[in-house]
Amino acid sequence: MGRGKIVIRRIDNSTSRQVTFSKRRNGLLKKAKELGILCDAEVGVIIFSSTGKLYDYASSSMKTIIERYNKSKGEQHQLANPASEVKFWQREAAILRQQLQNLQENHRQIMGEELSGLCVKDLQNLENQLEMSLRGVRMKKDQVLMDDIQELSRKGNVIHQENVELYKKVNIIRQENMELYKKVYGTRDANGTDRNQLTNGLDIGEDSHLPVNLQLSQPEQQNYETTRRSTNLARLQLH
Image (cartoon, rainbow, N blue to C red):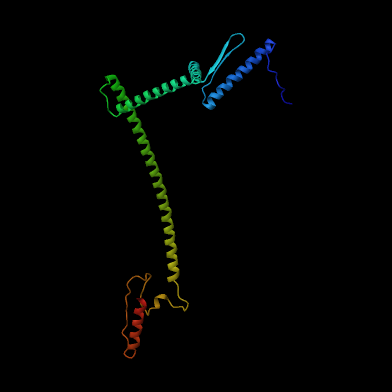
């Protein structure tokens, strides 16, 4: 069964009223804290018990929150009047112009301009600020360079590994070619004739690209024309 609705009215029993106050106070402060953390809100809660005891919670500073609250309420009151609204925006514009002027002056001083109006202490503060900025820039530059070096080293390792794998594949292919070469040139043809005997005694060897040494025997007189034709045919075959 679900909980029944509670009538919102003053609790007459003092003990029950104190227990309810304690429970709901803790729940309210807990919710205020969660709201400030989860939503990045500036929260302030002030509670006075029936006995006059103070309970409060502030996400930053209670004084700051109250000042901001009073300022916001005053601005809302001024914006309700058209004449006050014009004065308010004029004042805001003047504040922004002053802030812009200060930023431009600080920028010129950082660039080394308009330093005549600064005293020794101001110059030292400016020097310290520049040194801190330079140190931060150098640290960032070193970090970027280290990241680039690590990335190049990683890519170099990947390329080296790829080269090793390719070298292994090339060796495997070379071994397969050698085995195939031996199978092709290390056997006899279908007629039972050795490959090295197909050129009438010409020694070609294992590499067909090597120069061929021709050794011809002295032919007999009656077979001179036949032998000469066979020799020319062998030369044409070798070329």
